[in-house]
Each structure stands twice: as structure tokens, then as C-alpha cells.
Length: 633
Image (cartoon, rainbow, N blue to C red; front, top):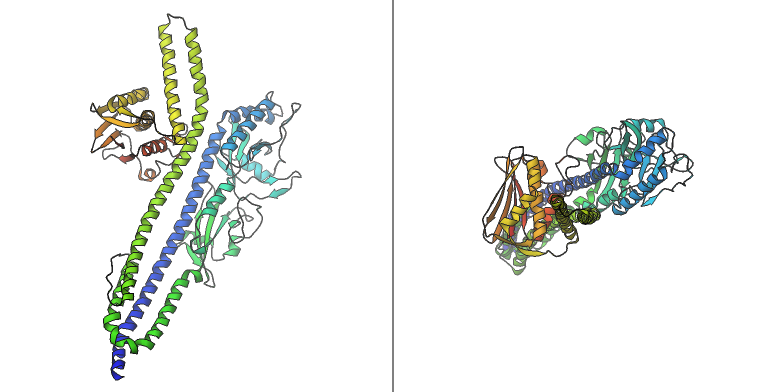
């Protein structure tokens, strides 16, 4: 009995107590690391949501800016001008039909597009298309421009309209009213608005309701880490009625695109969130009872306005710390049990338990510190299995992290290519009709030309050849959008590159840029000739537009180990680090408005990847950009 007691008195303080203390220390350290990781992940999640919302609103603003330039809307400006002079345009009925048909068709393509209105200078809606449904068409006996909604007419609203800048997308709170003129709903988000001008005077306004369904999807689909609840509120220092108004709330089931009524203010729900809090770190506060942690991010959705949104994520601290409380409780219980059985197991403790457990504890500590290594735990069968389980766990977690990163990259790239495909299909269908007309007209012109007019016949033939080339490009775009099988052929590289250079030579000459081709004879390539030529033309056009006058563009074809590298080098200003991460994004462009759609590199990337190749753009040390296509030869 005395020997067992002596062994116990040596083993317990020397092994069990330090082990328990180590576990508690590791648990406390892990808790602090876990809390820091949760804080970081929640803020990253909020930043990701804000980034998605910002991209969606940017798309909306660009879409509105482009819609205003549509012929149907431009043809309606004289109607609004006549109405401003209390006159009815002679083609009012016809042009109203045009604009309604155009907006209905566009909404059938862009289903997230909100209600579209055209207001007169008094703020009254004369055109409205919502959910692909136009407002009631006027009869032919109309003698004045009718309103499809009751005019808002309050003076502040009219002053806001007059203060809008020409050709710029602004934002305005467009109140929706019922037939009696009584305000029936308060829109949670401002509408996008562009003034319609004639002779430098406002004659009307093009208003697009906010994409509430799209914003709801972003908020609804965002991950709720640790069972957090999400809330969105508006900060509006100039309007006490809206300052702090809650727009979206998981707890109350409030959505942007729902029946929006008063649910509360941010200052009432979270008194801790004062005005100065949003500019401070660490970006979260705890409530007075210490039960809830409130994470927040502030975001300015409307350019040029002081109005901001506050995105709030609430996490129950009891749930956050519950795993570690259970660990501490388990450690205490284990210590009591160890105390009770130590006398019995004292003889075998030092050799069979203490050493393996220490190894396992050190492995846990190393893993908590970010170091992964294989553990060789000896001792009893159970301890060896625990070590094997730990090794299996580290391998499994490492593999899961790798698979997650790969899946995220694939998902982002897939989303980009899907958006490019959808837009490419729409553009292709729109171009095909005028192309068919051009080809038909060239055939008719050729029949009518005298036989001795050879120069004219050659010009008509060149027009037909160019139209055929455009038709092939459009067919390639549609094939890319539909993901049809590639029409692969064996391509001799040098003549194919010479043809691509010839097709952009006119643009290069106009900009005083020289193109030098360096390619050996005999290089061959398997691929879709038209699609790959479209890619090379896109890269060459980008290089021409980026190069200064008097500079030179180099086009190289180099063969490696079963790989062919096609290189386009320009002497421009290069790509800024901020832009480098977005160059393959659909609709991203650095060119002025009207000179680029932002689809070129997205389509190029899709075509190259369908050929199992890679496309890489890097800045050259001496200035300019090197674009490299690598394909199996």
C-alpha cells in the first residue's frame, strides 16, 4: 500500500497535473486562436458580401448607362421635349410602342432588372415596364401624354431631379404611390436614374428600380458562420426617418424585396454601435450582458452620397465558446477520475501512459501552432490508435483544405465563363441578322454591276469576305457560349499567324503601330482554327490599343517540350497590380466607354481552356505586357 502511494504521489504531481495544466493551456490558447479566426472569418464573410453587392450595383449602373443610349429610348426624347412644351409628338403612339417593346424584350433577358420608368420634368411616370409587362398602352385618340402612375410631385423630389448631372448615373429615392396619391410603400434601396437631355436641358428622366431580388439572393446565400444572423441597415445623416432604418433582418424575416414596413432602427437594436464606432478596429462589439458579439462593416453603395449601409452579423457567445467550456469540464472530470484510479495504475503509468500521452499532447500543441508532423505514439494499443487517429486527422484536414481551395477556384472561374457565355450568346444572335442582310445585299449589288466594273466587283467581294469572316467569328462566339464540340484541324502556325496579323493591320496602321512576326516554318498546331484566330485577334487588338504611337508589337511562336507558346508583346504602360486580379472578369475593361466591352479576355480564356491550354498575362520588365498562350503541339 505504501509503495503504491509513493508511486502515486510521484506520478500524479509529475505527470497528471502537468498534463492537465498543459491541456488547459493548450485549450485556452486554442480558444484565443479560434476566437481570432472566427473574428477574421466573419469579417472576411462580411467583406465578401459587400464585394458581391458592390459588383451587382456596379453592373446595374453600367447597365442603366448603356440602356439610355439605346435607339428606342433616344427616339423617345423628342416626345418628352414636346410634352415639356405642352404638345403631343406626331409619332407619340408609334414611339411609345417601340420603347415598351424594347424594354419588355430587355427585361425578358435581364430578369433581375427592376421596374423601368421614364419620368417627365414634373416627376410623373409616362412609361413603366415591370416584370416584362408594360403599362397600359394609350389609344390613338390621346391628345396629351398620359401618366401611368400618380405623380409624386413633392418639391424636394423635383429639386433632386433638377440637381442630377447630365450623362451620369445618379441615385434617388423614388416613392411608389397608389391611385389616390397616398404613399403606399417606402423603397428600401435607391433607384438608379439618368437625366434625358435635349439641347442641354432636362426633358425627362430614365429610372430603373433597384435589383432587390438579386441583392436578396446575395444576402440569403451568404454563409452564416457559427449560426450567426445577418442584418442590413441604412445610415442617412440627412434624414432622421431613415437614419439607422433596418432594411434586411434574419431575425425578423425581413427581406429587401418584400413587404417593407417599419421594423426598427439600428440605434435601438444595438446602442453600442455609435457613429464613431464604425471607423475603429477591431470591427465588433459585445452587448452589455456579454451574451452576443456584434460584427459590423460599413459600405457606401451610392457614389457621391453620404448615405451608407451597415452590415451586421450577430453571434451568440455562449455557442461560440461552448466547445471550449466542454473541453475544460472534460479536463476537470478527467483529473478527478485520474486521481481515483492513479493508485491502481501507478505501477504502469510512467512507462505505458505518461510518455505516449506527452507525445500526443506535444503533437496537439504543434498542430495548434500550425506545424503538422507525423506522430509515432507507443504504449498501449489504445494510445497507438489515438496517435494513428491524429495522423489520419491531419492528413484528412490537409486534403480537405486543398480540395476546398481547388473547388473555390473552379467555382469562381465557372461563374465567370457562364456570364461570358450568356452575354456572348446574346451578342451573337443580335449580330447574325444584320450580317445576313449584308451578305444578301452584296449578292444583289454584284448582280446589278456591269461586267466591266472590275474594281467595284472586287470591292463588293471584299465586303462579302469580311462579312463571312465576321459570320465565322459570331459562329465561334455562339459555339463558345453553347459549348459545342471544337472543330479541330491541323494548323500550320506561321501562315495562320500571318493571316491574323493581316486582319488587324488596318487598325495598327491607323494608330502608327508596327507588328513584327517571328515564327519558324514547319510549326504545327491542333485546334479550332477560327476560335484560336479570334483569340489571337483579341490579344493583338488589346496590344495595339495599349501601345503608344511609333512603337512595335512582337508576335512570337516558340516550340517547347510538346508545347507551343504563342506570345504577343506590346510596349504600353502595362497592367496595374490592382487591375491584374480582374483582367479575366467579364465586363472588366480599362478602355473608355464605347471602346471595349470587357468580354475579350474572358472569351479568350474560355477558348484556350477548352483547348486544354493556358493563357497568362504578365508585365514586362521594360514596360508593356506579354500575353502567352501555351497549347499542346
